[in-house]
Image (cartoon, rainbow, N blue to C red; front, side, top):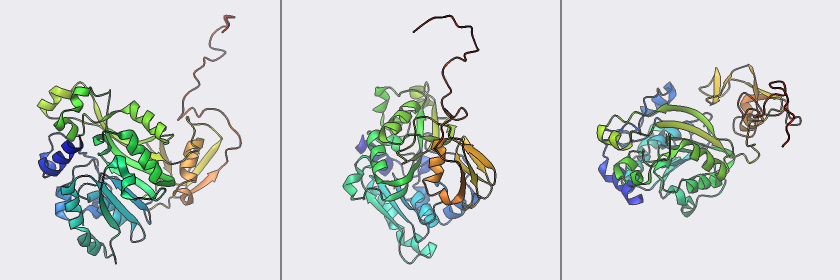
Length: 348
């Protein structure tokens, strides 16, 4: 499978127009500051881009970022501008042809950004075997990936390696393709379906299970959109399965709980994160308006209090008193209300 993917992205595809489906593309509108950064990317790097949108979480200044499956380097170069000279970006990819493009334009972007020296580098390697690249444990603030993890034949290993490399409080912030059910084994062997990010897509619930097993205890969905294949021959093979492009954020916080628990806590966003003056979006259930008292569960509290976001919030309460499950974002109490039915007098 490695050789098949290398061949597809290194030799078969020569540009975005060679893709046979829109699974690796998105029509999502990028914010103005991202569009501005993209305008400075070298044309060859842009031409050899095959990902989903652009993966850039908030508060990047000075961060050290790892990009899994960096391809021609487009996202790395945008991120290298956003982190500034005090930050750094490392891109990892297994396709020599893509890495050749990325490495060819390091000096171009360093000069374009006015940096004294490059703050980005590219390494050839496999996402499942990042330990072979001599990257230290606990060394990255953020790990990103752009529609690539689905191409890995060993996704649990990718998640374990990501957890190892993240600093405490760091996050894996990535987009990928997910399926409505488990993809049949025979479709996994189709090189086009795999290369187009379809047959390697995880069943969404399997992903959540794998993430928790790896140590990312409360995966948060940021956004999602349905994928339309728009290719008749591919539709005939795999059209019985629905697919989505989705962005997740997974925090390295070992004290997170398995459900959202209520401790009577709240936060107030100060509006001080660059490009986010009016609201902070943690995930698709937490759009926190500037200046407003926003009640949160214990897990959300930790995601803000124990991470790079801490200085941008005021925190109300602590975790000394527990009030049970947080009904608005956690698992509801499964038991019937005592007043709902008359007691039958039965026993267990």
